[in-house]
Picture 1 (cartoon, rainbow, N blue to C red):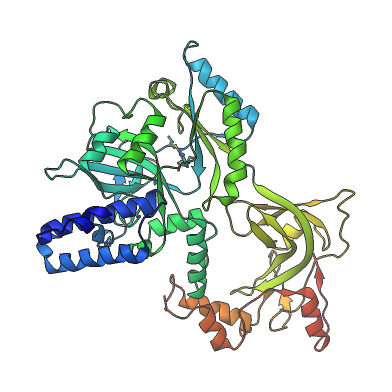
Picture 2: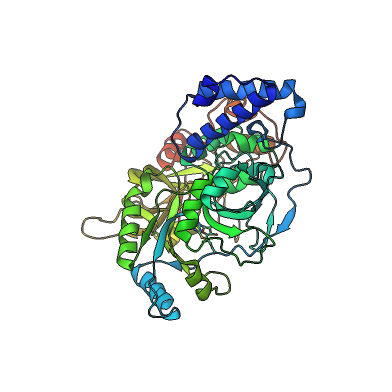
Length: 515
Ligand code: IVH
């Protein structure tokens, strides 16, 4: 921060160079190290001054300037580009025995006198990206971001460079001095994971719902959808993070794929070069230590602010990695230890019914609120009558609830033991629509019950929301709040059978249908 305060740049060129250096420095502190040293207002002042100077002197504007993260949008979707080397997936282990079996296979394939070291990393639940850096083309000898590709089918990805540039934890330029300290050539490839932090995910879904769009099911889908958005300014508004975990030689190199002799050194070099790497990483010598790392990660998992779905264990030495090689689709030198789904047992207090656009009645479980993995779960989907029959669930039952990466939890089974007695109330589907009270029908061979009243207010408001949504007419402003105002009632909240029956007491008789 001190440089521009102590020296007064003489020419616009010098001032621009000094501002860029400061902004890049503060972005690194803020977005990569989570350790800002100046306030947002101070940062904005630097940025505004730079923008003003660049507008005044357009000849001094360069594509790598921090003001140029949001550039032009791709015209016809994203170009398909082949990967330098395939982007593979990982084999999974679901328990200690499978993890030990993997380690035994590794030891057996390597010479017995080899010492083995493992790197434990978090398995970030996002999508992988390959970033290509090339010589910056100026006299200073740095590297610049050339291209960012999605994984695609593993051999060909999509060129999402314009969106990747908006991710503040991705350096647009790695200056020569940093390359030197990190021991990197100016041409290299970084692979890593794009994730959407939970807070950004909640915000995005609130905005989507307000605009009448369906919410994303989980942060991974949200990140994947965002990185493939054709409008970089939208991508820039959503907070995405990139964590680097793999370092390769640049394309065309004759020297094999690994750049450094150890994965642990590659991570350190990436950090030195200005990339964000996950701080929760350990280099260990035994599977017992790997297991302690896993146990500790499970305790930290709920407080990270982003989703992880396991631990990746990698053989540290790249010479050993090379000897171990690959199976068809995954390296033998790494394994993903997957966490079990997070769950809890709670009571099913009631079943509510929701009417969709097509009139479909969806049963929603109203649960005794229970914390699972950092959030309080009070609702779960029951999908349809067949699912209720499959589970054999009754109101008052205790049920096992699991939350995967998805926002909407699932009921996996009914629990029955001396502490958890069975419930007694059958789940019945209403014979009348919870909203308009017309008779519902279950057509021959159909799973679902439907309200077939074309002027049912619940169906109409869902229809209107769908019509205005981005995928259809894309009418901005016609979201949930506007639709509920227009329709004169709150939107499609699920209704309990008791409420439906109470309402029906005043009207026609209600012969509810048991499932
Ligand atoms: S290494 C050759 N490290 O998990 C494969 N992958 O199931 C190199 N992932 O496609 C992958 N965190 O998207 C690696 N620390 C990590 C990871 C990680 C998440 C993802 C990655 C990969 C998938 C495999």
